[in-house]
Length: 581
Image (cartoon, rainbow, N blue to C red; front, side):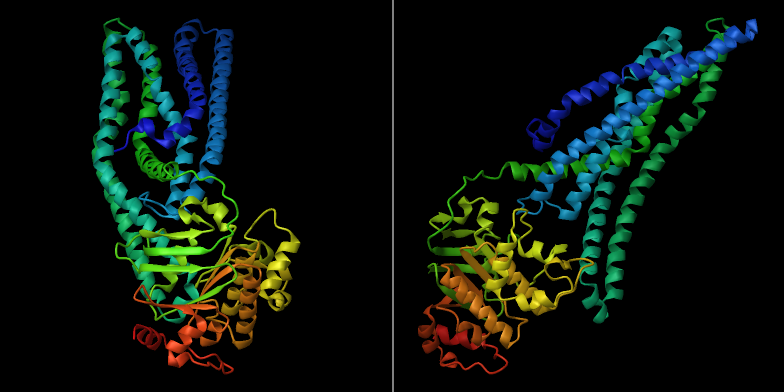
């Protein structure tokens, strides 16, 4: 376990140390106000009961009212201060955590949904009643001291109660910790699975998969409930005796106080003071025991958030580099998905100069999409290098590098927002001229004109539904926004007809004329005609690379391709086989 002193989460909370110290000092006065309220019943019994003086009763009632109002206002003020501190903590943590769990994570574990839930759990604890209970528990010894002043026997009694309930709380923690951890993990898995099903509900419903998926989701949900119920069952069994002691403490106090009264050691009115202070001293501890699951959830959530923040803290700080102007040089590249040991791309090398279009072909599973992710910096290579503009991709700040890269993935999705916002990559400084320039370069004016509100049409959840071809062409406009120096297109024509494919080809030529380096992955022969060079991949290795005409001549099936109205699909198994020959 890493030391707490080096925890980035603790370092972040040091900024609030004065605030929490002030709240702790503020809590010092609440016990005295409560004790003042507890002495009022004794005063009424001993003074009013004997003197039967109405003015004395009215005076005591006024004093009790003032003390009660003051105590209540102080509690309200404390709650408001905690809420404001929670808001500030949220402002400090939210942006860091949201950015962190949407980047490449190294061993932080969890999912974005879990990280958001952890953030909410942490904030709720740090500004909620459980923290107030911990502060009150810190000052509970004041009541113990007063009880010793009243009678050493009552002092020993309250110490015994506090020690008993404290041990019960610690035992509950250790008994339920493992089960609660399993329950939280399964809850997150069920949540992630449910969100994945919701995103693909139409397709799954058509194929009749929903009954099976419902059963699978419910199994995860049920198992999570089972672990949680087991934790609660263990805690309840362990808490049975403390609950019986708590319910019977009034009898214990009155019985013990009765003996002390008979021995003339205390006044009978003292029993009210003792009982109220004993309940007040135990109140915070009882709250901690009752809400132990929420405290434990906070502890686990804080550990996961701390791991996430450590991954951010350990990231290398990058200098701002000038805009890349040179070639893309891929050297001895080996890599694959971050969670796999076996590389998908193995020893790939090539150079792509500005103003050139490289077509990447190969059978399914050859590593084409993996190569696209590696050369754009989405995945980090295990070995080798990707140099763009005389700088290795690892030397770049990801956000700054992204402004010089355009990327169209195979599966295109848009975020909730307008067409213009999605094309402009949600850049707050985007101008109409730059957005329209991207639309013109991508050649999608015809699509924008047909949308209900043009550039203001809403996309994403609850927005306008686009066809597969429309999504790909809008994604192309997003990729070319800002005139990037490197554009990578992964199967950008898989949903396009012949005319739309010609528009895509002209957009690629427009990028080339502007000096951009373009990489396009495609299965169709017709799109390869727009390429200057071709690279043939097979099982992650380069089987052939060179000028388009050279590769065409080596592969007889590609010589003098004539595109019919519907572009033919390239037989990539034959291509790879011919390249190996």
